Image (cartoon, rainbow over all chains, first blue to last red):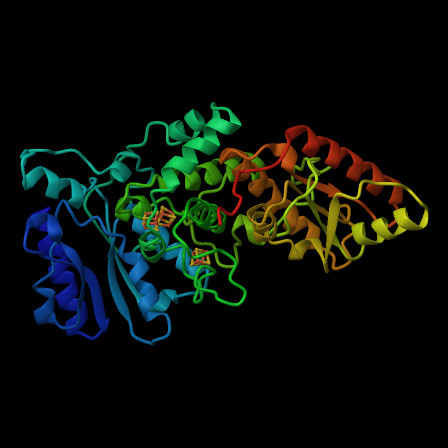
Length: 300
Length: 144
Ligand code: SF4
Ligand code: SF4
Ligand code: SF4
């Protein structure tokens, strides 16, 4: 890990020094080890603050959206899942490839900062905990799929059965399922953290901010929450890159990936194998921007 | 929403119909005096491609007991491709709605061309039957 830090610092200083990039996006140290934060270095000096450790879990590709209207050149560090986010943005024409210098890291798996906080502080003190974050246990793409420079050695996918949770729910009866989602999703406090952190949520005006017409009620009640989650999941169809950030940042542990993975599973079953953001082919369209005449249907 | 003063419950069913086919089929059904239940309310949209899944969600949210989306047969879209795009969306959406616990009979889709007045009437009969058998819908309904 520490040599990653050194390597990234060196690359960042080099790029910033010779003007190849105007800003370099990585992480810097927080008060505690597990409090690393996204960081935007703008000079070789600032690049010395960069750090990469077990908790560099944030998907930084999302922060490219801050630069979509500028002309600045950007250096960025991505892990496997994050790199798929960059392809997502390229596909949506949110950023231009020429403006990016991508440093890819073959990701050994990250730890959950929140879990670390619980483990290291307070009564439940067990700082030796080495468990990977939930999203990293289910990782299907630890190696970057797009990069200019690659660090580390290739890792193998850690996922066992990524649709296990989905299948569990599918096996329940309709009423049981509704009850399950009603109970789970009524906890949501509509903080929109899951939307803000999502790289597939790149709309300039989100439908949930739309006032006229106001499609989804803003009240924090069970049905409005359900509406929010169903609409969000349907917007993720063919676009979610499974970085798991939405679920990780949720303050009330809503299993957002359950709905996302249900949609991924269905899209794969219905319209053939597709994983969002795995490969950038110019002009290639995501599944809901195209069709086949032979698509299956059960229309009356 | 008015206070219901009769004890008999009748389903509220929203049919979202494409202007160029299903809406015309409803017209034709009327012209030919085909009877169909009065529990359906038709909303006309310009094309299947306009059928945002939000229409369906919103309908349930506002008290519908069943929703049908209906457009032109594949290959017959007035604008060429709207129904193909919509088909993908609806297939995904129907499965997602079943996943969160909605009964499949409440949310249906169909192809009805402008010449199929009798198919329109039949489909409405079947739809009303299906939804009536399930009873009033509580799921996703606005709490307020
Ligand atoms: S929905 Fe969640 S997992 Fe999917 S891209 Fe967005 S943040 Fe990542
Ligand atoms: S929730 Fe939907 S409308 Fe809002 S930003 Fe995400 S994809 Fe766009
Ligand atoms: S992060 Fe969690 S609580 Fe916040 S809006 Fe998303 S699901 Fe709801």
